[in-house]
Length: 477
Ligand code: FRU
Image 1 (cartoon, rainbow, N blue to C red):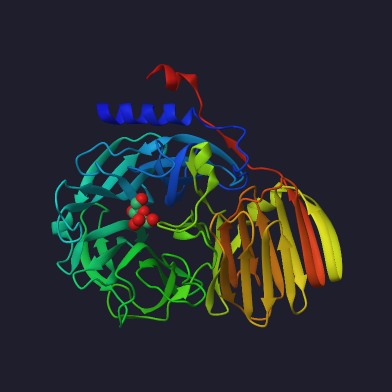
Image 2 (tube, rainbow, N blue to C red):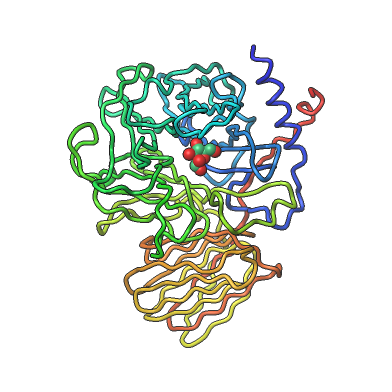
């Protein structure tokens, strides 16, 4: 038995008992950490008739710290259960963090591939010297309790073109083989994606490296690679791409390249397309369930200049709602999963011309069809559609968030999922999406629309999120 793991799990459970039930910003249709810090979604899968969402988790500090894997599961995507932390940094090969990774359901068990982060003490640059990026495999027979972990790959096993920055394995099965894509920073400080192949999911061989014809950032984090509607997609989070254009205004970028050819051999990457235009969107991960490809992402941004007042309540960040992906009209489009419709009350329908003002509860699903230009105001936020430009501006409650832009065709429809402190805005059926946190001062919200069209508003019920506050865990400590 791993004694450190037991202690760390109990410490995390004890920290979780500080969960603040009367917190005004706690989201009701988004998954957030019970306490502490959350970043990337990890290990997304459908295993034994349940959806599993793991996430990068620092239970002891809302400002971050050494990473664990937190865990929620659900049968229907609208009622969730908080599970014990799945991965703790409890081995020499992951002692400074169980970093991001993915899940593979195989032979009735759950295999989790992730990066074991190790940073040595000393005067190092931590790029060429001083750190380890280990590829680790963890196994759980029941999807909730960890059975074992083992070290699969170390830096010496990666190709020499990679620096010590290699991380975030995404693994899938294709035909009779297994594939893994990992993000890297090359010796020339260029972002790239390493492709590995395996017969059994245990022995891996580097077979290719995906890169752009001219450099695109110095590091690619959280790669994902999949085929959807006949198009191969390489999703990455490039660091070091700074442009004033829409989609590049955040500290770090996130989007995809269409991939033509074979990722195992000859291929070309098309132009990079940003995936979301809001302030808070990073490290998306997808997974396949039947014929659907679903995605969730971190609704946050590393090293951002804006903040979140939730830190006063002991936690920070959440995940986006689950979204279904399609490749259509030559682009990747995301829409909230249809399961969320079950949270709706009866619709209120408002045709409008010139101006409409409506009072709203804290949780709402707002759908607007419009003709031509539209301005929307919503408790401290405005969204303006002019020509092919959509501008989101936060006047109040942004905690440093100001404006973001997106380019779209003429605005025809909007769907807004509004939570206590999170907004997801889908324009033209997912042609452009803005994900953002915001913290409106007043409890009641009001929506004003200037333009012509029709609004349908559904009040939403909260998702059920069953907490794990069992006294047993506390007595054990
Ligand atoms: C992306 C990221 C990953 C890493 C993880 C650590 O947000 O930096 O590359 O695995 O977060 O928490």
